[in-house]
Amino acid sequence: MLDVGCGTGENALYLVQNGFSVVGVDLSTRAISAAKAKAQERKLRVDFRLANALSLQFESGRFDNAIDSGLFHTFIDDDRISFAREIARVLTTRRKSKQHSPHCSISTTSRMHTSPRESTTTVGELT
Ligand SMILES: C[S@@+](CC[C@H](N)C(=O)[O-])C[C@H]1O[C@@H](n2cnc3c(N)ncnc32)[C@H](O)[C@@H]1O
Image (cartoon, protein in one colour):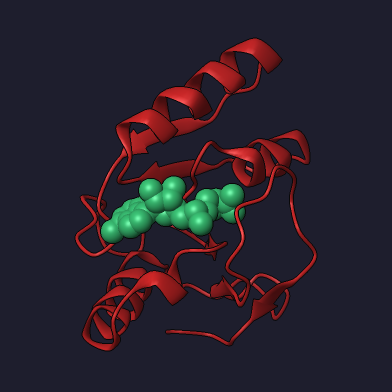
């Protein structure tokens, strides 16, 4: 799973604790450093990387799912389109079952938070 704009990594760490394999990317060096420190402290394995969500270095179809908590709404309209295209590109088109179909969840909230939220809204499949 890809956590795009992962910040200091709470959502990614939560997902790993619940059995997912997660790559977390963020544009902020400080956020990625903090996320890596948390993962080390909690003895959890998350691949945190510095990356721009509008131009990801992953091959097409790399991920089954993506989560965005608090990033999409920060983009101007043109970047939102680029973002959706880029996320769709890195999501697999391989369908295992209805429950495992690729999708992207985009949050509608604007506050930073310290724990995973339940307000994330699934906006539909992008592929
Ligand atoms: C509101 S915070 C949300 C952090 C985390 N997802 C959460 O829910 O706590 C938005 C994050 O997006 C990151 N960000 C902003 N523009 C980005 C971009 N183009 N690519 C990757 N991350 C970006 C910021 O550095 C920040 O950590």
